[in-house]
Each structure stands twice: as structure tokens, then as C-alpha cells.
Length: 216
Image (cartoon, rainbow, N blue to C red):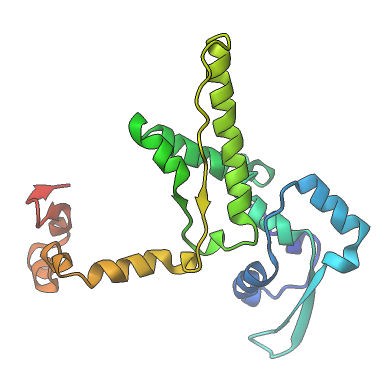
């Protein structure tokens, strides 16, 4: 595993504070860029405009510390779109994974899925994340449409596919919100196992659906 860019630059980030500081820096300063090369050039031309400073207190000693946050502001989110710049183990970007997932669905559902991509989770909260995801995914889909048209010699034009990524205020807690809504319905308890049942039958009971009485 590679060290983080802050450590590579020699920033004095206390090891015991690194995870919490990284989380706060991610939430406060990171954003998704549209072009990584242009973003590097912008930072290099006007560093004072883009560099932020993180100030913290060491948990063990109470001593204050500070570190500059520069390229990391856009390089952090970029791992989701250009993972190859960080590791050779995982090189498939998020838009390609989403496209592959939708392509594996029944063909008559794909257009609806491309049109209703809903974001969920903290790492989708980066500024302009939904715009970058929609743009990159649209490029993949449009390339496929153009290839299909070319395959038929241009005589038959493939119908364009609408791609829409939905961003909403509760996306950070969407999973928990959805779970709470589900748990508030009377039907939910018909599909649950009680603690007593779990203790009596063990973990294997989790592989049985109480509604359909079938094994997963």
C-alpha cells in the first residue's frame, strides 16, 4: 500500500491523528475536478489561491500542528475515476464499473437504469462528483452507441441513451435512511428473525427467508 501524498511531501501529520485528520480534510477541502492536468496547472499558477492549511491538536501531547493541503484536494477523489495512478491492483474506474453492472442487467431495463443512477455514501459528497460521474459514464455509453451505428454502416442509427446521475441532500445517509424507512413498516417484522431464534438455530438461520421459506 502506498503512503498518502501528504506523507510523501513530508507534511508533519501525527500518525495517531492521521485517520481523523484525513477524514476532516476530505470532507472540508476535497473536490472532484473535470481534468486532472488542468487542475495541476491551476494549482501551480496560483498556489496561494488553492492551497489550504489544516490545523490540528496532537491527541497525545496537546501540541498544535499544521500542514498544507494542495494537490490532495483533487487527487483524493480522483482515485475513483483514475485508480491506475495509485495502484496497479485495481485499474477499473467507477464509471466503467457502473456501466458493466448495468450492461449485465436485462436489456429492457438498461435505459431506465442509466437514467436513474442514485448516489449514496459519504464519498459521493465531493463537490461536482455527480457531474464528473455523469460525464464519464455518458462518454462510455455514447461510444457504444456510435460503435453500434458504425457496425451497421451508418444505415441504422442507434438511439441515444440518456444518462442521469441523481444527487440529493440525504445521499450521505441514504442507506441508513432507507433502512429506517423499511424497519418502520409492519411487513418488515414478518421477514425478520428474532434474537431468540438466532440463538436457538445459530447463524444458519440467516440463510432462510421467513417469507418465502427458502434458502439463499
